[in-house]
Image (spheres, rainbow, N blue to C red):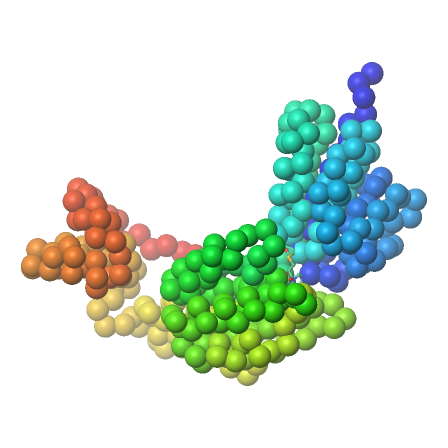
Length: 326
Ligand code: SAH
């Protein structure tokens, strides 16, 4: 008989309330022989722990936890490593795979690894304040413990300029108090002072607190280790205590009207600013004498990209295809 097959499960348990844990997350913990995690998270699944080995760890022992999980899994045990939110979002999944590879593990080596997805803080916090993520968004961690500050600052600058809605994870701690001030300074170089911001603390936990503010006042808010800061883009608005980022349909259709289209837009065709229409207009503008450098400046795009678009063969772009999105 072959040796018993151990397993490591990286379980995301969502923001911190059992109602927001997935069925698979609970089942994974239920089927585990060993459960490893921070005290706070282990408490949340207390009802599932009877008869199991439970290892409650502190904040700084991430690699230890991964090493320990591997040892147990090699003995044939099923080990659940609990992360808040999603285990792959600033969580244990990365360090665990790194430890596994260092120890010579491969997916075929007998120890199975499963990542169980969970609702990350960005999802949980967004759900409590309306619909702030309905257009392109990204997350940035302000923790400079493992990432050099210039790298974080460059990303803040880039996404502020690119008008993403942004979630700031790990915005502030007892020792890290100035990162959020610096983030604010970098954002104010690109975004209006009255850009909506919301600070969500302990989403779906006992001390949940939600504070609406604006970019110029953001750093004065009560922000801590359990807060996520959501910064709107240039279209985001707050109404009746809700933070909303429009999806963009109102460029083309009147929101509550008779379904009529805006002047210059044809129903059932891509926007004149969509790829096909834009390419067509770019060619016309260039033919009428606008230089590549001028076009690059006006569209805020690299000149070599404009050149590439202009020099590509004219394709028969299906202008009539209407994309139906959810
Ligand atoms: N894996 C987690 C993130 C861990 S990093 C996830 O996917 O959510 C820790 C950071 O996550 C905190 O500093 C905070 O910014 C955010 N966070 C985690 N849980 C939160 C909650 N319940 N409410 C608000 N922010 C939370």
